[in-house]
Image 1 (cartoon, rainbow, N blue to C red):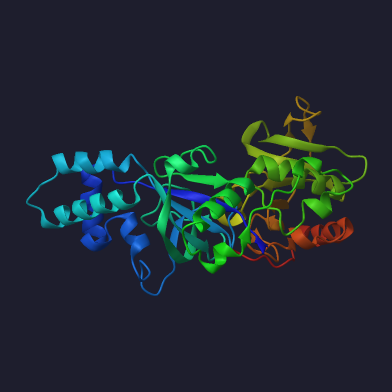
Image 2 (image 1 turned 30 degrees about the horizontal axis):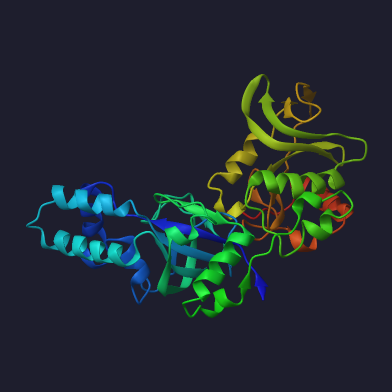
Length: 369
């Protein structure tokens, strides 16, 4: 069995007839609805992977379930009242939508395997969620699980949203689906497992927080159980770790950094993200914390203090894949999704410190992204 993370993607129906008309014009009557894409025997875009709204923390091998919302019926009926009944394509889409609702409405009816980690997408039809992931092996259950069966275990999804599943929720859903369906191999071989993050200590954090089985769902989890411990190991001895620092240059506010730590005698900003791949403006965020000279922390024991610093050329980024070095011109010997050091095999703090000394050098060749 393999440990996975999972989520439910909610599929509804356009809430405005004009939106449906636009989808028909853009994608054709046969592919106007999200359900059409899921149920199609071939990829939505021939030769390209089908991408779908997905949480940032999902990676290859994780699982996305599909839920058809009950509210879709309301929008289908309204569109029937307001739409042009002489439009053949519109009528065809509405009939198909009503038939699909009769079959799947209010149920978890399918699943897919995540093919690659989720990342930021600013184009495409599935833009309701900031990050999207390529999916594969889409499977439809012959006997879906109805809301009335799972509502006591899983909060009812709504709208075009993505609902994370805890390990117990995933295991229950898999068991329930398996009672009356043949499960696809990637689901049958998967198990959700919660590891006690609340038991993480400065002594065991590398064993627990760096385990391949761990996946952080929220940035606060990443910071509390991974970044805090990592950065306290990396910082110069006897210096504070500053949190949520506003960044000022000559009295002008430039932004905010998640952390500042003193590394080799220089204050270095740190950005903590669930996924560097899923951040549209990550380099821009990092640049705002470079070249500044005053940082007042807003969190932690040093909140309210002001630290005068020497301008730095280096920024660190921490995500659930690992640790990155960034300069104003780009990533140094790494790239989004390809950290300099993976979380699951972090080196000793001295290795990171030495690399940061090299990274400060202007002669270092940057990787532009």
